[in-house]
Every structure is written in structure tokens, then in C-alpha cells.
Image (cartoon, rainbow, N blue to C red; front, top):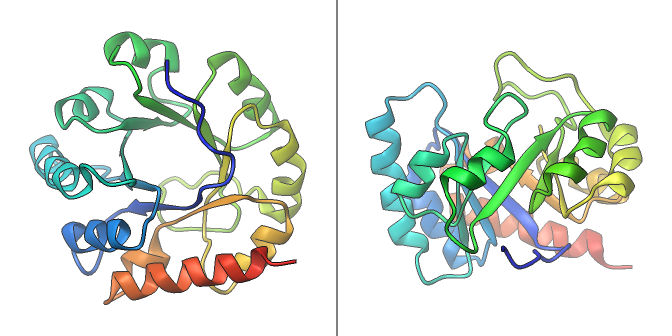
Length: 213
């Protein structure tokens, strides 16, 4: 069994084609105390993804930063990741757990609407993603936008800690927090930055600021 995750862990960083490189972004995440780091390399050769995954595992090992692999439970196991994140069209969580029965592994699940959020209770993920909150080009084809009102409606239904994701950056972080989010994921806000540590630090500072009463 995985120990319950805290409801409020803040920034969840997803790495997809980072400008500064995967290693530099992982090092920035560890240095700034980011709790979750996900590797998402859709469409890339499996050998290349495994190589990067093992590199990020070395960087995050022994730190508070939990390393998550997107989509592929076998690759997550091979790289000795802390967990795997699955989409609605990927393996079921039950099957993923059967294939990777190592105690303490983390299993996350993407959700995009009320039906999926409610159904997640039966699958018992360790956390869920809710989104996309805003339009984003990082998924093809894109999922329908949830929006801030949708986020506000779905958060109370979440059966596990929820992470708002999709098009989130410095310009809209306040509105995401105002909608009730306690955790948020970013992709381009860090991956497009020349200095990922500075970008991570700025997001964390803003999040701390918007949390103040």
C-alpha cells in the first residue's frame, strides 16, 4: 500500500522537451524542493525515454522529489521510478498495480470531466490530475478545456489529492488558486525557460504569495 499523499504539495513539474535539458530541469526541481517530477516523452523511442528516465532517477534519488513516469508502467519499473501517471486510455490502475506490485509505488490518474472524477474513486489513485484548465498545445489531440468554473466544480468531488493542469503559468496562477486548487502542474512554464531553476523558484514564490490570506 502507498501511504496517503499530502493534500497540499504545491508544484508538480512535468518535463516535455525542456529547453535547458531534462537533467538541468530535474536538478532545478530537486534544488528547489519540488515534490513531484514527471517525465513525459510521448512519441519518442522507448530506449531514449528509458535512458532519460534512469538519468532523472539518479538525480532525484534520496531527495524529497518523487519521480513519476508518464503512461508506461513497465518503463517506470525498469527505471525504478517512484510511480507512474496514467491517462484515461492507458492501462487501468488495477492492471498497472498488478504489473508493478512493488510496495509504496505511486499511481496517478488523469481526469477531464465529472464522470471521470467520480469514477476515479473505484480505481483508488494516489492522486488525480484535473484538466486541462486552459487551452494547451502539449497534448495532441487536446482534451476539452475544463476551465476555472469546471475546476471549482470538480475539486470537491476528487477522491484523492488533485492537481490542476493545463496551460498554467505565472499569468493565471492566482486564478487557479482562487478556484480552490491546492496543487498545480506546469509544463511550458518551466520547460520553455532558459533558466529552469529561476522559473521554478518564481512559480513557488508566486504560489506562496497567493496562498496568503
